[in-house]
Length: 245
Image (cartoon, rainbow, N blue to C red; front, side, top):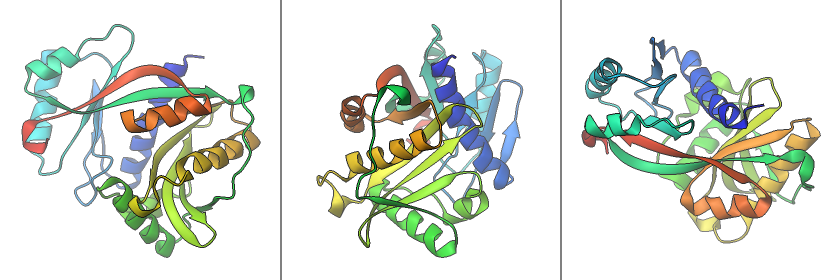
């Protein structure tokens, strides 16, 4: 199994599902994209193979004509170097992440006292939206959750009755489950909640029979995942045009 490819496929499949449900998914020859003007996410354009200049020209035209910020992810794997093409065409790097995975059969995770409740209606979708925006300072509109919670597990983490953060878990019908959008609201940080959430999510993943969990970590979050047993796979750079940076 190519775990690097599975990590990326889980992420791009998630974007695809969200855009399909919002009727905003567009398939081009070399890249796919979706623009949701009432949400800050996903709003991605991603290449399915190494682009040429003509593909960059088309991508640039699409992004330049949009009033919504659109990000292009670049995965540093298999010797690809088209980030140079991006940079030579005026794109600027706005964020770096690290693709990571864990072999769930080699670890022993126990659920913590943190409860993970799934979004299941408009009330909980609005709460998830509010918590996520506090944690990350950008918006995932609750309507996207209502359109897709039958296929994506949007989770609200509670310490007793107090909501402390969000996450989502998404799988694509194979042995991989992806963990995304995990964040703790500012007033609940530095209390160990992120680690407790991960233990509960990974314990649930084991119970459901998944073999691997994948994620894309920020530099700030990477050490927590290494501590839990995740391994680094690849660097992920995110680019956009200067007017959106």
